[in-house]
Length: 180
Image (cartoon, rainbow, N blue to C red; front, side):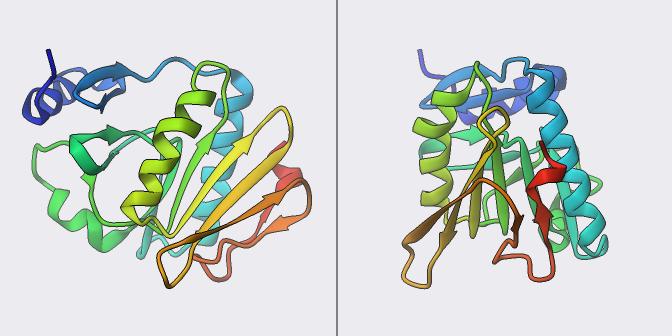
């Protein structure tokens, strides 16, 4: 039996440690991750936040949900949130959810979620219109970046070394050697 958005939101608030997602009417608990996955996400989140003005952007790691088409809710590994989008959430006991496109959404590959992220989450992020989407593989040392174009399409670039400059976050540089 499909779960309603209201039931999902209630469960997610009552069990925040469960890291619940909702996909096609089905509850899904985000599984535990490897050290390589978590370490890379922590390093990336730290490097992003130290380069972004704290009064303009928040960097979230494994917290908050993206609201997607058909009532889906996913928790990205890392996301950059413009501070104005957080205003309606402050001081209110509601689930942290973002429906507006974000400047950067990142999934880090892990053995438990690799196919799910590629097949379900990343296509949904593109449908949402997120400006830049990254999939980082901690073992293959690759970063795939999809960047939204003015016509709504996305370009794809694969990085294996060097520095990556998110087009959606001018002035930010991520040196891949610091992530591995």
